[in-house]
Image (cartoon, rainbow, N blue to C red):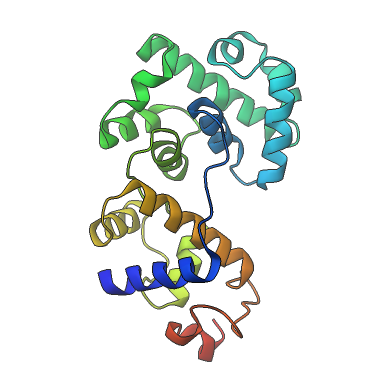
Length: 220
């Protein structure tokens, strides 16, 4: 399995090159982006973050104090913006309560301790927590998403129905625990899923994984 996963990584990297993720100049903006990007395209997240910047709401203090309705108005480009406004406020209040308002206090924690704390916050699930750990804290926590399940199910390396934690454990066991590697691999998987390994009609001809993918002949 280790050889298969690393071979897949090398093929994707050779085909697409470095992806330079995550887009964001500082940890807080990355955290906000990770929460807002749930079920929405990144271009809409960028619009929401720009609106927050213009309104001077891109800080934990501002998010905690602004009325939820006003916060929701600024992140309207993202779907479920009312729910996401509450998630942002819950996150800011958690940092205020548990870390004296200092995000660095959370991000300095060991990976599994940080992950447990993140999952205590309403609206933050496994994928968002791992995204925050990997991209905001720069610590190794492999992100599993729908693209990961799709690509590796078609490659025949997973069933695709496994529990999130089972897949995270598998990838982190088989791939060296390296932040740069995890970062690049996740970004490459997303890019590949959008470029070739489409949900309903995968483009197999010219796919960089064509030679190793049993899904090519079965049409999966």
